[in-house]
Image: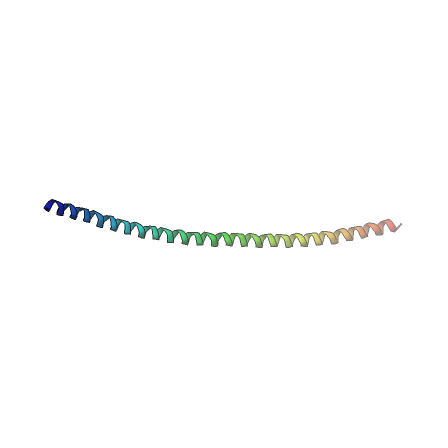
Length: 90
């Protein structure tokens, strides 16, 4: 009877140790999940910032291109008018 009691106590200690280990592992897993979620949000924010920065840069470049096209068109028109004046002016 005493052997069974000792065996029961050993099994109970093992079960308590396993339960404590499971609880510790669950807590650690929760911490890791929270860390992963926080890092995911940070990465999403950084990617969003990069995308918006590039969009702003592209918009500025398009505006510069439009201004250059306009200036070139004006210069072309002026040059064509000068040539037309020279051809028509004997």
